[in-house]
Image (cartoon, rainbow, N blue to C red):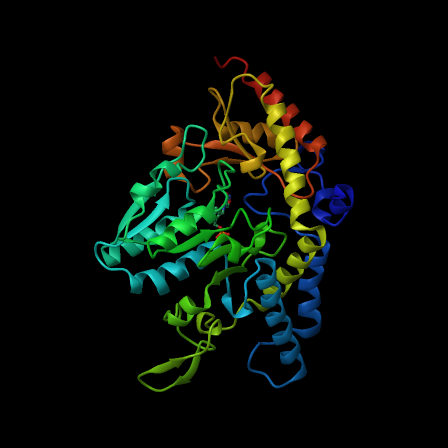
Length: 411
Ligand code: 7TS
């Protein structure tokens, strides 16, 4: 079990007040999480004590920085049960990780007539890179739909997955619906037709145990900033044999073994994909964030959020005139609730909640095709993390009642 009060004390920002002197209730964790003191301190410690460039210096600081940077890579690998830390490439975020796969793998492997299978619940960063690949290679995009209860519609899998399918790219957890997708089953089916499985774990990695081997992921992408780490650092896992086969993403320093005037030879994996000076300080702090989460235990994280979600779903059902999206089942849903008040724009809902100290997100959540599928332009979204409490869910529900008062004239 999580000791939530102890966890809260680790996050300095949770002590601050916001509008109207209200204590912050931070329920926008799907956008980015807050940072524990150990992560903030790790950044400061790096810059105060061993800031140096990596992989090149012979001096003490350079050695220490390299050891910390490569140590962080090993932590990321362990966190997702990667068999080898060379399978982990540091990138800026999930978006960059998915673009790396699209650019350095798909763009070179695919040809006209090949197919890429996605779903309609994808974040734009797991859609647009594939649109670019399709345009360049002549490959075709196919989409899995969602069911009435907002799960992935697997009844269409057999029809959509063919010998022409070369890539299946899906989110493990929807950032709008909270739906946790059965990636393991899809990966097995994808491998049966010879396709590679790309997993967007931006929402899943912060909130549940991830095992790339058990999932059957060929590539898996996630961001440090949604899981207690700094912004500007994320990771791409790739199976070694695929990474070895791939050409580079960006060209420049560090990614080469030898350079001549007219041609070059590439460095080993993973450095082949890390051109230029990497984000050393943030990578080290990302490693500390992973230590922090592992200290709590990812099973405990998931259990805590399941409980919060169950409680929030029960309380939100008490409110009239509210449409709630997603499976509404904590067994297959992360700590995310998207909803709409009938007749009230979600931005107005967000503004009223903010005046009560409750931070949520309102908008299309970078999932415009899903918004269209749901028949809305936007939703309001509350998303939970390790430091949220049932009392905060109550504050959220109470703030929703305030929305009702203010907009009571709306039919
Ligand atoms: N994939 C999913 C499922 C996401 O939720 C996000 C970010 C991304 C990819 C992209 O991550 P990034 O770190 O590269 O930006 N989602 C959100 C969100 O729901 N609200 O703000 C960012």
